[in-house]
Image (cartoon, rainbow, N blue to C red; front, side):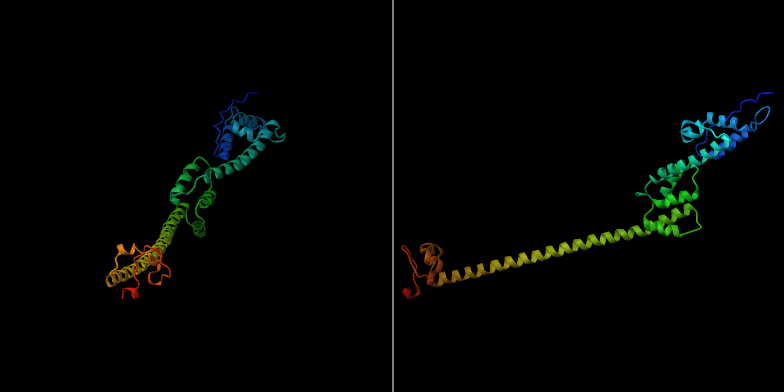
Length: 255
């Protein structure tokens, strides 16, 4: 019986395991002098060509192979488990991207670049993209159906363009209102200061005027007032006491 010549297994495809197994099966069909059909032989080929990351995922199956159909078992479990692992990895990878100051369309292009090496469905991509948008934009964008993901990003761009100026105007209005209120308070304070200053100066002018009139009518001067005793300096005509030396002259005395 002729020996089956070894076949060359293609490099492991991290992004599309279904395609990789299909390619391996086409390779098994090229076995010489006959195709490789034995399930244990195919299992051994697959295990010997798995990278360490993949062997860790199906470690239990490699250590204890299925007795009935080891190849079919490792194929099914590797696709299923890797798919679950890749899904979580893709979600983690793509949700690390935040909108920030970018347009939604710019965010989508960045996410597409990250997803280029993974087999990401359009439904998952759209879901992850919408999650990165503001809640109001998510609601509106999600309600629009039958458009491509790129069109959805364009709609999101437009929504933000329309809503952002309103937010800016509202903020400016609040700042302007606060400034006006502060200016009004400052103006009130200025008016009160002016009023108090005027009230303070008016009695002084009246007092000075009366003092000058008394000085002229009675021939008193500021220099003479300094010669009055404390009682006459303080109370003048109403003083009930007088201590020498004092040069104050009462009205009835001067007449």
